[in-house]
Length: 79
Image (tube, one colour):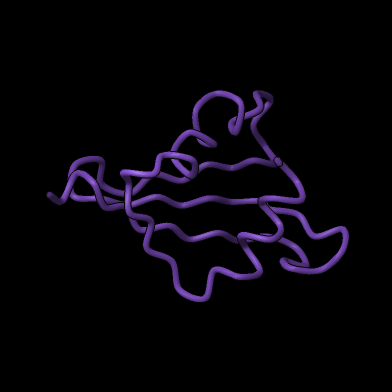
């Protein structure tokens, strides 16, 4: 159903390049609406507090446009 699909947008500095940094993660779905996660301004490690679970959940379809650079930087920055 629509609860198993989320649109993902990632913004950052030098995504896909050595030293690149993810700054903003945007998620959108019919059930949650649109949510922005500011990984720079947050004092908490948002990836440790559940955001990484969104990316790791195999049953959740993530829709991204040209995700290569964002995925590489997320993997390098957060494992």
